[in-house]
Image (cartoon, rainbow, N blue to C red):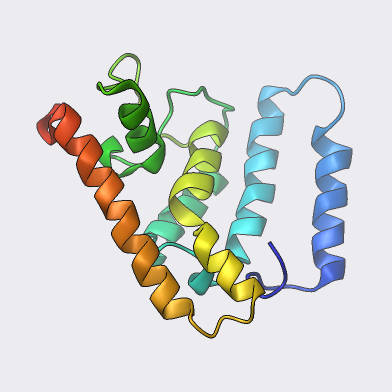
Amino acid sequence: MDFNAVEGTPEEWDTWRDSLKAEFLHSASTTEDAGAFAVKLAWMGQRLKQKALHVSWTPKVHADWLQRCKDCTEWGSKNDYFHENVTESMRWAEAVMVSKSAPVSQIVASQDTVSALISALGKDAICEAALLELMAGGANIDQVRAKAAKEREVILNKARRIVGESLYDP
């Protein structure tokens, strides 16, 4: 990322990065660390420009994600998903596409864990194509985001067809 995709000054980001190093990159993490880490994650998430996010990551979804960061108390596991319906998750879709089957065992939807929050931010919120476009000046940002939205929907729909969407309806 660069500063065309986020809010804040380089100094603020340096302080944030340094605090992550000081607070979390030390000895084994504790349960208390999970909530504090989620607060740091929220700080970063609040500074992402809307144009750097996928079209499907609406302000309402973003507000829900931020609230879950504030409520987070657990690190979680790889089976945790942010979305109430996991068929909205790119991480889920990628797993289905690789395995050609439903990753049904132990999936826990609608989670407030660090694992679910990080996964959602990286796979569902941040649009890599938009980041690259913003870094290049952003002249075609709306077209880039629209194309990324279509590509994302194609992948999600393919995964849904593989497993049958009713399998995961909440």
